[in-house]
Length: 307
Image (cartoon, rainbow, N blue to C red; front, side, top):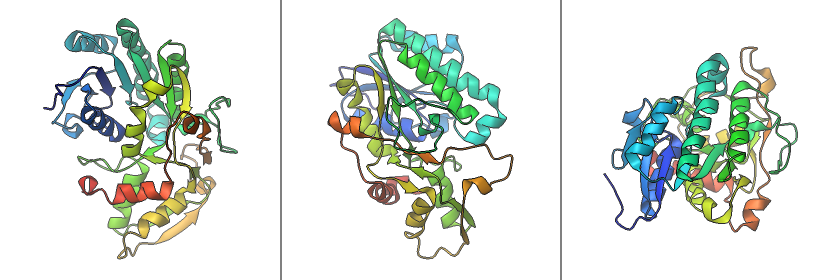
């Protein structure tokens, strides 16, 4: 396992088996940090080249044990959460435990170690009627998942060393897993010529998990506390993203249907349409935001993410 000899900061990354957690761990290690990843039940999806510890963040005793095993913790990147809007709607107790109780437990750990805490939130904390949301705009969660993330934000912002980073990271899991996010579902469907329903009225300014991880490492040095939005400089609909991905697969023969999110059946959880941020604050802090189509190229051309 990789342990950098030049490390000065000890960092903890929750969600080590997830898309973003993997990228953050690798980026931290490459930058000379002494990094420890935290996973719960999916050790097989964590990168075995790095130090990883099992922990149920929804269990305070389990979280407290991390401090005993690691010792000093300077920075925590809290990437772990239960995602999937429909999944969370159907499993509210588990969602609450992971996203609300889990975040509160991580905050307690940060307090004990006086750690900087970087909390990864989501664009769906806003109702999604207009987009171009700024950091000081009032959130209005539209579904249970978004509500739990918003409660996590409030708890983090009450901590002196807490920073909330809202973003929509996208990408393909490097180690391999069943499709668990929009890009993984999209690429799997295109590769297997499955029919696609693509929303032409849901807009995001997403960023690749790889680029996001690189930017996240700079956050502790440019922002003491508060909220910051990270994302591409432009926005695309999910249909436009789908079409951009399909263009990379010339042999695709599946059926494509462009639809409104409003056309989905009644058991489909309500979703915001305009899920894109204003990123002016990031630019003023010297953080460079990419173009979304270039991010899609980065994801699809990354050979290490091909399955």
